[in-house]
Image (tube, rainbow over all chains, first blue to last red; front, top):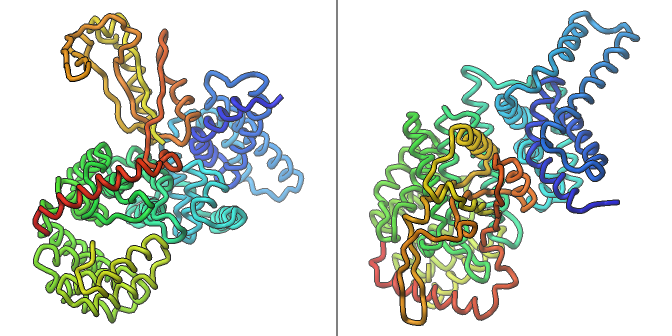
Length: 426
Length: 144
């Protein structure tokens, strides 16, 4: 008989254990795709046995032992087959011999390093950003294909295929299951951080769909970030990213109005910010800075977010400091988007005319051609300067460029207010 | 979603007796596991109720009652705040906690999305009134 409570318990156990299972197995079989299959086999075994026998006292160990036996079987079968074909070099044979022998000892070791290896492998630059995101959520976030598909508003088959192809690519490229060292580490770590932040941003400002935000994706990204901060505690930028995400996530419930419309930072009710997350974010930022990472790109962005978090009211915001931090960020990672943000800070610190000057230099920037924030910011400055006709056109242009329907409504509202010849509500 | 895990008081916690080293070590390990899994948001232990107080409300009257309080099973001795995917996940984590003889309660924390459909027009109106008042307050502060 099917027992729904046990099935739910098994799902929960698997969600807790799957990343560790896959990571531990991947080190043994040296193939992330195969490791995931073995972990799935163990899950199937649990689904068969636990409803009868009950959930074991140490379900994680049970799953690992089961998966381990399957791995041993598989390696033995492969060796037999390869022996038959006599195509096998001695070296490979010896390695597999050792692999089987070491399996028991190796698999009981601390899996922390394996999780880190798994993270670096899933975020390997040989994969497209989309593939890295899907694979990371699947292997490390413990999300099902269906959940990933729902989060990104794409058909389940698309995600399933993306994951299959990603695993194949990793195998074909013979990506080693290891934590990169030396000069390679910085670039590879940047790739891991990028993937986590991509997931967070897709949740924080949904690029598509009717909702302004999908908090669950933010939670998934935060969890990955927090795990990574424990796995690589000496890396300042990991703490910088965690700080940035914690502080941004602290505003999630304040940035959506009762009708689901966006509420911009300066209009948010700061009492509704999640002050636990603010505190966690500021602590993570301190760690990044204590590790000498104050000038890392994520730490700088976190420091900017922290300026807002520390201000009890919008009027208390230290805009001059924010402008200086954007200046540092622009030197480190020059980009028109950073420049646009710097313009906003400058305008707040020194007036809209100073901001407009920077923004006007950006209008010819080809990379910002379809970027709705550019006309939105320009419109804001123009309206503050009383140039309502120009402001209205810019608001309308911004509205036509955004893919988010909630944001479009807000922009059109502000444009309509300009048409009445009055400063629009911000 | 978030869950608060409420650990109840017992004779020892109420007497201010600190747990022995073995329990502290086990609890430390468990907390570490929670942190490594990205589940732990906060964890706090509370002083015995003798150091606390209650304020009783009765109409307009407020009466202060100093601790200790006797019904130790109803008292909270500490709590965790966890970030998990489901109640089942919270339960699976709790089952791994190194407790011996006690009952530990988990309660889901309300989040904005929980209001969804239940966010009635009346509540919405109240919310909008609040927001309008907030906007009024903002107008009084100088524009940045």
